Amino acid sequence: MKMATPMYSSWCEILCTQIEANLKIALGLLPDKTKFCAVVKADAYGHGIANVMPIIQRNNVRYVGITSNAEAQAVRDTGYKGNLLRLRATTRDEAEAALLFQVQEQVGSLEGALELASVRRNGSTPANYHLSLNAGGMSRDGLELSSLKGKEVCQRIVDLLGPHIIGVSTHFPSNLPEELEASIARYHKDVDWVTANTSLQRENLLVHAGSTLTLVSSCNPYTDMMRCGAVMYGIVKPELGFKTTMTVKARIISLGEFPAGSTIGYDRATVLNEDKRLATVSLGYANGYLRRFAGLSSVLVQGRKQPVLGKISMNTIVVDVSDLTGVALGEEVVVFGSQQSAEITTQMAEASSGTIMADLYTDWGQRNPRVVKHTQNVSKKETLII
Image (cartoon, rainbow, N blue to C red; front, top):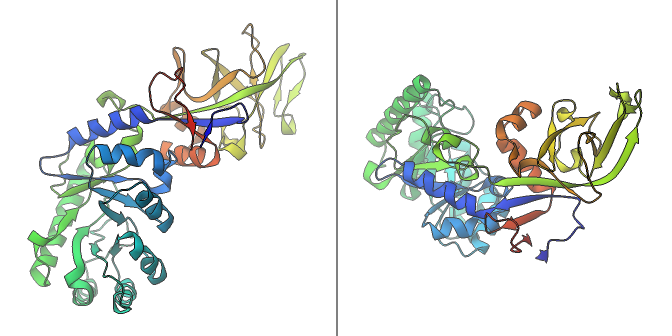
């Protein structure tokens, strides 16, 4: 850990207080008797597992979702003793290495079950498994039971791993109300088939499905647990009180006066039709500020939206500051988030980038230093680099 210093040309401020506020709202939205699995894959959506796990533990969340063994280790390194679930299929070697971290694995194919069964026969501590069903959904790594072959495979998986299967899961491909209701019905039909035609008993299983978008929909999935990530990071439903949890900042590193007719950036992408004062800002596509942003985005300088001109370079962008006074070298620029009364919102970022906020968060948070804010008052000196 190091104190925040000007050595960072661009950085992400992680708003821990807001992550916790979002989590509390999400827990309040859960259907009665439904558990919450906090998803921290992609290094907690770019926010840092080490930063998010203390919040999860304070709020007594007993299931955490990860994808990689490195994430599993990062979670355990925070002292978390609860359940750790991998949210994808795995290989034998990966599962064997994960025994150290007590990772519960998903299995949705005979090939996968055979691999996992061989791990148990190696004399290691047995892992627990969750049977992953496709249920007419993502066609990714779940078992499809609509065919006779799928049903036969299911029975063989249970024969191989049955005593250690503690859960049944699926992932809904759409959260549009009509499609979601149909997916929920189909999933429960499949679960009923499994418990009627194998040795698995419903009362011994954790049946889980539903993501952030399911949680904030009007549909109850009638599951024992829902697995949610995006909701903790304020990506959805601001009308419910969820707020974004990351601010992306950089600095002004150059100022200049340029006459009408000057061209800006590679390929002379922008031509000035009048004299302009331009600022160069210290981030670019190497920091996750996509080339797609060119000609479509603004940043905040002195609490005002200022247009980004020309193509995005690897480490710099050019901003029009002609209508501002007193702009100085080293001044903070907000690329995403709030400054004074202005804001670059989720909707603006998604519209400019052509992608979703989860994509941007994970990119920004893993390409830039993270400055952790443990209070909403960012003027307080409680900032650490993690």
